[in-house]
Length: 144
Image (cartoon, rainbow, N blue to C red; front, top):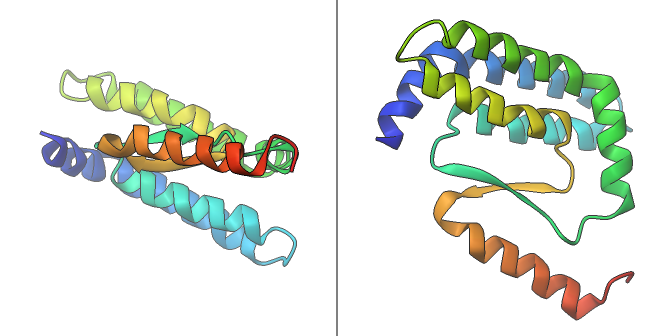
């Protein structure tokens, strides 16, 4: 079922959303300072192409740099990428087959707005990823 949803997603909205993320990534890679933002955009482009069967996990070891990165991301690209998801969701919700895809688009809005400090993992690896980050914080200590 995931594969079928991903194929329908790719045809109806995934391709152009991924292109939007890739354009944002290219623009941000033009300057040396914004290369980390470009890398986030490319990561999100891959997620926008094939989202079903994957999920977003918040990294517990992310700190102040992630917050600062998210604020800058929101100003530079996040708001218009989120608007792209909302517009696509609205159009997809007009059809019966598009409703699950519209819901998936709405679920992509938070990661479009705040990508730093989050990791995209396969749905069956969620507990492993969360445990890995908790272990990293426990070994380093909170504040190291």
